[in-house]
Length: 86
Image 1 (cartoon, rainbow, N blue to C red):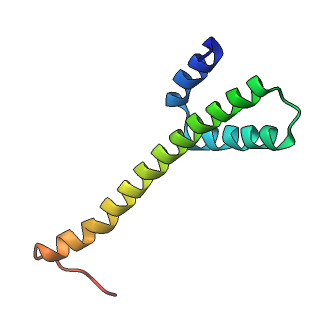
Image 2: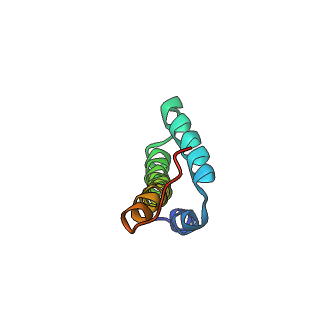
């Protein structure tokens, strides 16, 4: 791994979802456009993989939060809480 790739990989941990997604879109666009050397293409591919992991991490976290939020009303209902249906 090159120094640039190491630095980039370390920086992905601080990216928000939208930042990672936008950069991933740009990486894909550059790969699809072609015109890069094999080395550049491999570096772009590796960066894309890292960015995809960041996006996946954020999405899994969001899914866990949604699941927890959706489970909360059911938990209060099971524990004897009342639900106002209107």
